[in-house]
Length: 439
Ligand SMILES: [Zn+2]
Image 1 (cartoon, rainbow, N blue to C red):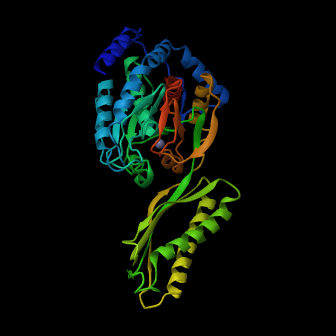
Image 2 (image 1 turned 60 degrees about the horizontal axis):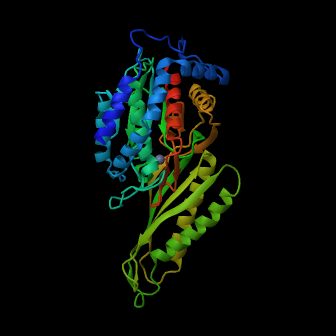
Image 3 (image 1 turned 180 degrees about the vertical axis):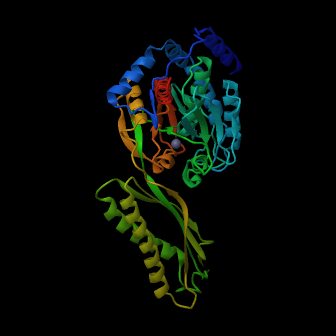
């Protein structure tokens, strides 16, 4: 790895560097921020950027770095980053950002890796964010297995590759002295997945946190996907608890598992009707558990439930149906019990990701679309649940863009990442970032 790194640095150092003059910002600034661009305006900005000699050199460097990026993708994937335990990988990212030249890189209070690259005016800040965490528990084997151009390991695509992209962008901008008008905030975020509930990005947008004017999340494994809308989600941990007892001797007592089964059936029936029409709305019981032995009535039965929709109203409908189903199942089991002890029902919210307005029509959307088209990718606008949910819910322009290559089986143990034209996504992101930040 050391040798490859040295070779790359030598190659980068050999590329022409223009210096000493400041390039006029592509954005003429209005009083309230950058001038609004439309499709044609964005295409013009991107076209101009792509003629910039430094950008052209940067593009070549990104191609040259491909093999090195694969090598360090493997190394980073093999540093586990389970939910709430991202610190080892986060520290590695801070090291990388510092080595790139961003000496202020550090971990913030919740463990995000954050580095600011000052712009010429610094009047605005563009955040580019990739999440550090994976969905896989600590004991998961994260050894990378290679099969030609395909690399297999849990978390390799989602989102270790995103972190490599983040690092590459920082390195390339520094190496080629690509100055911008706005500040750029590079962030490796914690807690994007599952029960992390976007805690890293929530912290970023806390009261008194950094002002962020637009937000680019690097996540997702389809090259043409441009996420402009937030899929909201509500998540719960449900526990039915009761006295428990012997399966034969205490037969008839209120039964937590049977109540849970009934609750699932009721919720599934109602949920299917809601999901059958309108905006895509989903629900899933992700985990269930409880019980002590085959011949015991359990004293506790639990499940984790996830429901999602980009439509706030649909999500509320699902949420209402869910609560109704849980309470009906509780009542039904308690009514039919023999003996005094009733079941208790505990419903705990373990995640609420806001559905948000769309960023379609924003400058960021136009810049991203134009950058994609410029490199031959026709954007497919979609909704998803990513770090961008938080800024979208605050009406801050945000998109989620591809991390390069092809990701398959995200969140499954047989996850894989294919190195197919992976550099193109980094080039697209660089153009988008420069257009948005004002070159
Ligand atoms: Zn992800």
